[in-house]
Length: 193
Image (tube, rainbow, N blue to C red; front, side):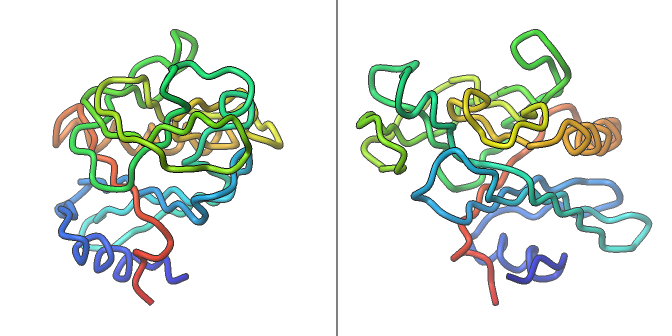
């Protein structure tokens, strides 16, 4: 999979989504590699931006866009099922805040659409859609080897240091472009080449 700046920009625009340009204007992009397996850090998170004319892309590969096993199989927080963020561009999705009041993270700032899966197995099934504010945050999993209880629908880095780097980039961009951040979630098949 080609994760170059050029190819990711083309992939985002091919879907009809906005790709932000201008010095320091960041694009936060998730790539879901599999829509069927839960509990593993098998997805990608990308930060793409321009830095004084240079095209920069940061790639984080210890990431998940899927819920963990605990909230998929044991404890549904919503009777309609566990949340799985629907692919698409979620405008103004996050602000910098505190995840569950504990540490700095990207916290949900606008309504989003999720799929709901309530059959309590480890395979992700798209059953119904739901739209609203569900606490779909961008946070970390404290270096856990499996997603487990770290996600009931959030977008989660395996390592705190990765989240810290992304938040630093968000802070810099926010000083120029505002304090809400758009998130574009693609599927592997959406990435050109």
